[in-house]
Length: 349
Image 1 (cartoon, rainbow, N blue to C red):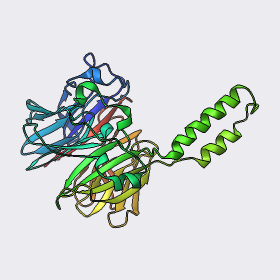
Image 2 (image 1 turned 90 degrees about the vertical axis):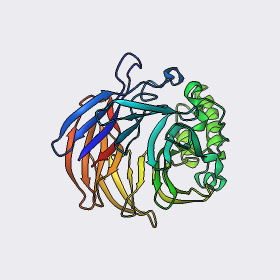
Image 3 (image 1 turned 90 degrees about the horizontal axis):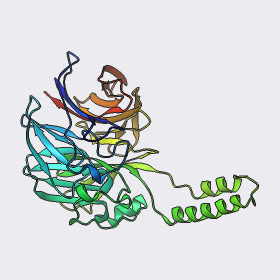
């Protein structure tokens, strides 16, 4: 079994340093077969984030003897020797996170614009879904999303911060013509949040003129009253009517959780920011198992069979987990650089 992964190297200078790799592994032998530097984005000036931003590789899929590998704003098609055959891009796709493929096209998740896009194999826009298209879902999430413009080239112009309300970071085409999307970190923008900000401003003024004598008791009390908890949601969308959806999983999130997937045995898995793989029932969203995976960061998932998964971590490494037995079977460390982590994982039989 070959495994192909992408990595992201944070705090690198685009154009001067390698910001990520595509690596082909022989999993049984535990060796690197080939590796290459990830291609830089088309418009690196569009994102100034010094950590991840537009760096490195993103989602990856194997399709018809080709490797489809995303970076920040494009998808590159590689042969088995990691030679680039072709590339695809479109003006509305930027900050790509994960991709999925079937015979009808390529699904792309754009995390900071809360957008899912479907392209044909020449890069033409076929379909898309944005969080603003479902008012009922927004009500559940307690957000109010502005409509997305399809006329802006987000690769060049960048993505306004107000668009990132759910951090939509994975997309999976499912066999019943539905999409599974992972909303990695939902940021409610309720009236309570607005009121909380105004009250904080007032308390800060009182503290500056020493009325509170340095005490933060009131500040803490107000924060507790108006605290809004953050969650990840795994949502199933109806492709024929994208206003129809069901919430499969709701799980706490301080930072984005990643890679919500519906598995072949109808369970749901999530790579949590708490360094745990969480297995849920798809019927009621209840937690069935938690498997701790040592590492600073979990991201990247691929299903081996109905009992085993591959999960990526940082520093860059891949771990094989038997989630049925709650045990780690094998680990392959690819880097000791604390800034390099796995992003995408795909299996080639």
